[in-house]
Length: 197
Image 1 (tube, rainbow, N blue to C red):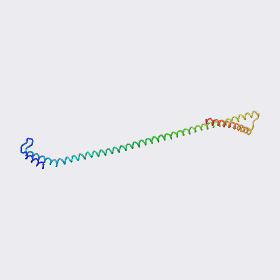
Image 2: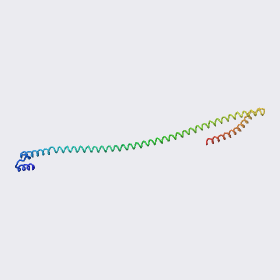
Image 3: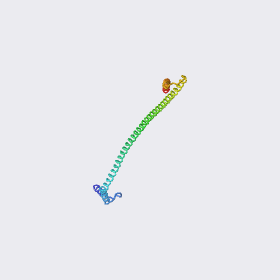
Image 4: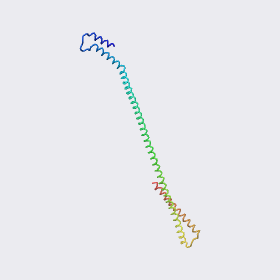
């Protein structure tokens, strides 16, 4: 209200009418209207503007807080993703290493089994050869014994009795057996030295 009083005093002092200044009554009414309007704005519009400003500030702060929370959550998810990726790479490397180890063990097992099978087949072949050789030697002994008896019978000119024939055959077979055994030992030594080479 001091402004109004000052304006009224100023209007009273200027006795002459100035074309720039409004009339006293208009000046007073204008000042009063301005003061009333300013009061209404102060009481009604300013609190509403402050409320809108506060709401907008809260909204912006809420959005900033939400954005910060989302950024932290994204960083957390990124860390988890990197950890999972690292764990997956470690697991993949472990699986590859295990597979390589299993493949190497399987290869060694297969090689060992193949070597055992080859050794078994070779040994069976040797056994079969020895069996055939022994059978051939026995058959040869029998035939040679029969031939010897027949030859001895012709040389002597008369037939030998059965016991004497059997004794002669056994003696001859023993001699042949000794010779065959000596030949077999020599063949085995040659097989052993040939296999060792």
